[in-house]
Length: 382
Ligand code: GAF
Figure 1 (tube, rainbow, N blue to C red):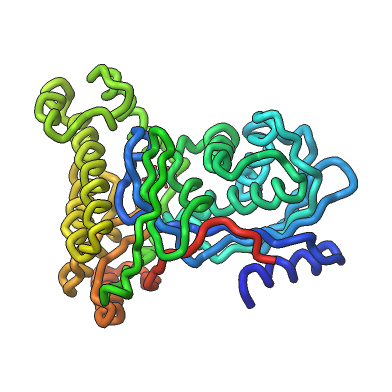
Figure 2 (cartoon, helix red, strand yellow; figure 1 turned 90 degrees about the horizontal axis):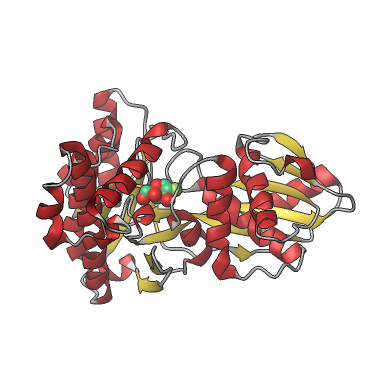
């Protein structure tokens, strides 16, 4: 059964009536451009065919009833709960969207909601943005709200920053909202400019192997916030609005003005922005295999300069490269999560087997591997 059908069936089972509709939003894999979004930089994610589905219908009284299949829990939310910190856990992302709408001067419609998801939690595939964006789509349509789609990423980000307390950038919510099938989303996180870059690997005899290392990441923990704070402090020291304003050529001079650790953080961001621009240029020209060294360089930069990888992630990247992957890197916020590898189509199974063998040898739990294709963003499915 599709995720949309499962959400509809869940709604009927819980509430004894059919939903008014089912909306869904995808998780994402970021091809390249990590920890650049909150530095006003560039990112290149694509949506994966793993989706969160929200079946919903208007409710008579005030408030919201929300049931999650994965949590096996029903949460009843009153208007008083729209206060940051009041609701935590999975429901906090839903209530965060209600709160963000109200903060924007929009009254979300009372509703009954049933949700289920194919996006694994804590795998760095942006399960939270998928949830936020699917809920937003449902509420906007149920309430006929005057909330244009290009404002959804900021609203969903506001939910996460202001309600959940995770100081994320704008990448994940943009990917979940704006991505198109067969394309990666080249996003300028400063002005929101978007280019849908063709990303059809099969046409080039290639595939993108994604390995979920099962090393759970905890982005609400302090490390993500610490990286973000270091970048903002470095920008102030350098007298720029954001690290996006530091060009690669100006890096040596900038590093002279920073302590050693901050300098490495800045070097990651500045070089990563350039790698995104280089990757986009190559993809536009159809020179897909040539992005591979950029992927591998991105990983080295995250491992050595930004220090956000963990042993499971480094093992997966090394195993992919040893098995002949053209390039490989961790994707997402880090401290666990997923690794991607650009491989020949014919090498997908052998590369996945090589990672499994390396994990077994290291005593790690068996990882989950799949070949990812670029899917569409948020949509009404039923
Ligand atoms: C997480 C965040 F939510 C994104 O905004 C982004 O910073 C990413 O980590 C790192 O590139 O997914």
